[in-house]
Image (cartoon, rainbow, N blue to C red; front, side):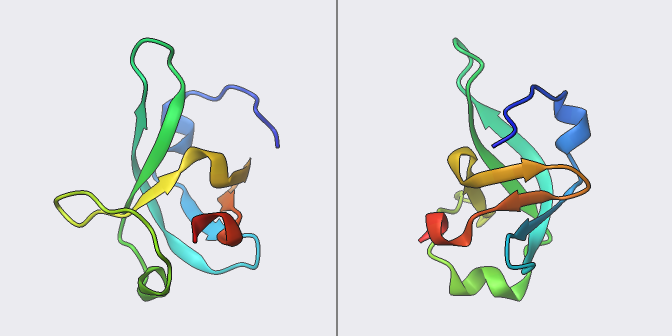
Length: 86
């Protein structure tokens, strides 16, 4: 995976898709460990109906959380490995 550091503003608002091309939603926010700066997960907005098929964690406000370790690449889209989400 391309672990090149990118400013958060470059990731916010990007479409999150699986490597198979299924749309999951848009990046609303990023959570990270404040001491180390390690990214923990992406918070999605406008989650698609497809997300209901996945066993993903949600916030108290029912926002979808995508673990950072599922991210394969960040380019025009944020690509995640769907198998790692279940």
